[in-house]
Image (cartoon, rainbow, N blue to C red; front, side):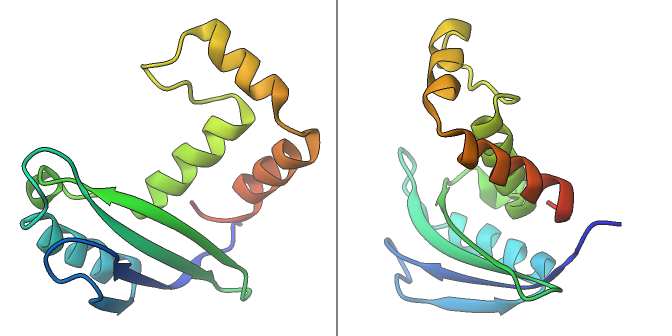
Length: 126
């Protein structure tokens, strides 16, 4: 069984309400992201920093680009982390990258980075 998320902290870095912070369950923080998204620029995004604390005390930090469309569609922090880790290990090629450029990118990553990302995916519920 994978290790679950204990809590999430998010802080709005830019835009309306910059500096605002929320701490709580994943669901509560994702609901706040929807609120912040209402005030995101119509073209572009506002930056939000986040930190996930897992049940074993491990922490993961990252940043989300909150877009206006998330006000309706919502946003998954868990999915964001999973997508990023899968990108690093070569299992999630972005649409803007060709297969060749993506393979080259992954091959240039240190093997330790890829191994850590894979281990994190295997161990934590993201």
